[in-house]
Length: 268
Image (cartoon, rainbow, N blue to C red; front, top):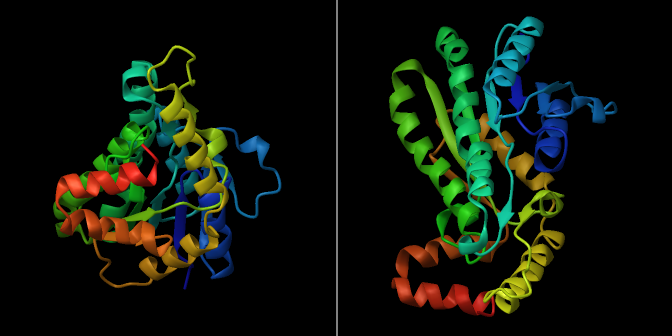
């Protein structure tokens, strides 16, 4: 029996790399993607060129995978980008770029694999979102919005795909020790900005959370559990207890009480 084929966008580093290496040890045939695959000659699994913001590269990537194997059994939409800053001061071009990467890109990758999965009469799509997508976080509002939108898109997609035996779900990580902070777009802390003090302090807090985050291999283990589940749930969360519990608190607390908790957490 041929091993199941997994395609991971953003598979060259961080969480995507951890997922790919872990699944490969479990017997899966893994393909990752990167905008610059030549930068990763030592990757333990093939890295194919793909930029989720360029639809033509998505189509080329899918064709290349299918030229090597006959199926794509699992798509893991992991490629994403961070963005921070006061919403008032983030350039519109950067807001649009973030949504191109975190929302429109994953949608286009899904659309590209669906014909193959429909022909197979099976398939699984796992969208890597974020616990930040469950709440509007100060100075991370654009990131929260793009990841939250992907959560909702998944809910709608699932119902549309049920007739084709294609499953879809979200996995929302909290903070993990990866290089995401270095790859974020950071709106500059402007000397004359009314947000200078609060944004500057919050930026340091966010980077500290990532630096002290959990082992990304935990995400890989959770991915394997989802893949081996016959009927996956819609939403999964992974991360520190309090990060996951913050979603529960948002559901049960009055809005203003929850808002106050967040502001206290970020010392606002």
